[in-house]
Length: 364
Image (cartoon, rainbow, N blue to C red; front, top):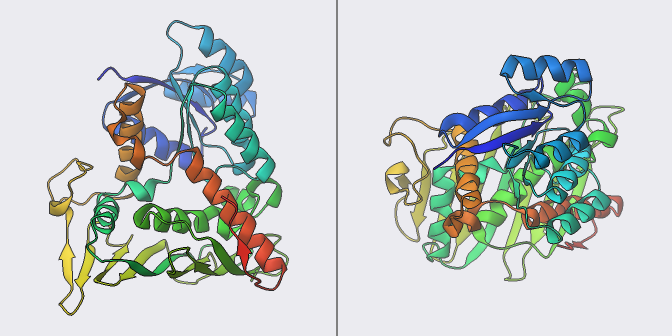
């Protein structure tokens, strides 16, 4: 496959997630990074681009127009900015006919999300959202097992994402924008809660129809939520829950999913990403490994651990395949609808919490 010419918005020197996306994009040799608007500061953007040996732009609008006009211009762009800066670049590049690979959540506000939806609808360029955990092999195995009826009808869904790094009034580049409502839009529910929401939605194939949320700001003076307890109701009759917290002291990146059905149960934890616990009804638990992965999402033989970076790389490889005309993997890549679902989750949580946990419809 000819490498996809890739650009990047955000992700300059010192940025965590930009480096992650660049590693993932080059892991399978399916991309060539050639251009970027890597910072809103022109000097920093130029310095960062020089370090990477790529074309530099001081403005994403300028980049979209210029790259679309080049015979060797970018075919796709990766957007790795804070949440409030997703919509502008995404719309600009979609309008220029350039595919968009955007970090989650979709946007900072419902208005931005709606504008992005219209841009996707009105352009032929594709939009992809990087919910990387759904691309991990054993998560894809879990999804296939649920679809095949291995646990019967889903009755109970429990997703958790627990961190402790914001347990006090921490101030650094990563913490400052995530706790700024103007940049982040929401706190824990947007940053990590959307991951738990999408993971449960991806594996079960079901979206809750209503929820009841209790959002808290445990750190005094923090203007966004840092702990969220959410109850879920599904149209199928299933019940669920999400706990997303960034003040759970001692927790590093505790993402997990547990499903209980009429015929069995499944359990997956990010700290052991290559294991899926399957418990048939009235039988002993079984630990499944990547030897059971039929999605061809792996690079190494089972037992050679793959994890966080490889999840991103799986998404990037699938996106490259779609760009090159292979639609067989498209249904497992998060898209604009997945992003809109995450935004509906955030909106419903905020509305419910303001009403002391009243049940609120999820308007997907």
